[in-house]
Length: 355
Ligand code: MN
Image (cartoon, rainbow, N blue to C red):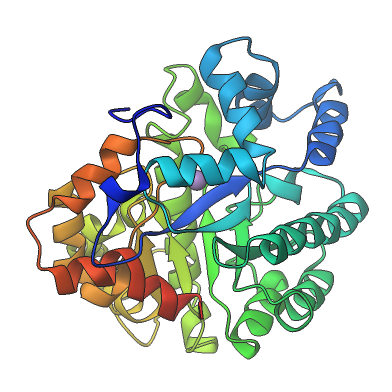
């Protein structure tokens, strides 16, 4: 950090745009209690154990700081936002949210978490925007919670932390969730989760399963599964958001398009059927990406060139990557004020319907 609490002054962050950070996390203390019970079980999922098991028990300064920030929806969070010039946070239940819980607990706790977040948004209506947590374990209940989140709680998006106990949203049994998101006109933020048990071993043995690489591999694959399963042919107005520079998919777009049509023509896989458009068309029309965790001008400009200026948004990934100097770096990009305003502010206002 180049700025600390003692030296930061809000004025020093003045800009001709608001900074809206769009992939920011929170964790209710009650959820951590549920996690402790899950972590105490014998057959605990290796990815969950490696991720939340670590953060919740590590004595390291970084882990303890992150847990303090995650559980705060008031002064500490606002202080950090002020210290690095974040006007608004779009907040979601941190990974894996309720998706690691049994079905009944997941459904009931998603409601508890959404009520808490909605309450925080009511306390700080100009600073916080909320995403709706859902339990994909029960797609019908998840669809109902999307409706409640939009109509009763005034929330602006849905958060799903990638796979649910190894199952992917490309399976039509989950498509009530897509139908509800499309019907209520809210985007779904497909956020990483730790890798499922059948995928994690070769990543974990070299320490590459987490945010360093594995998250992007797994979440990028999830997004591709949703595209190739024909979800956007069935739900053409559905909008997804993916972080971490689109989990690298913009960089892959040419090869995805070429090899998708080659795979369809070869009839090699039952699961790769013809879809109406090229994979990159869906990326341009049904996805918005954020730069969470990637404060890197070349990657941002490349993605803007591939997806369009309206499809790339700013995100900090608070508190996991709370870095004031990264905000400075984004402010200093060699980019017109108009395009920076889209990146930091107006794309998020449109996608999340922030008023
Ligand atoms: Mn994140």
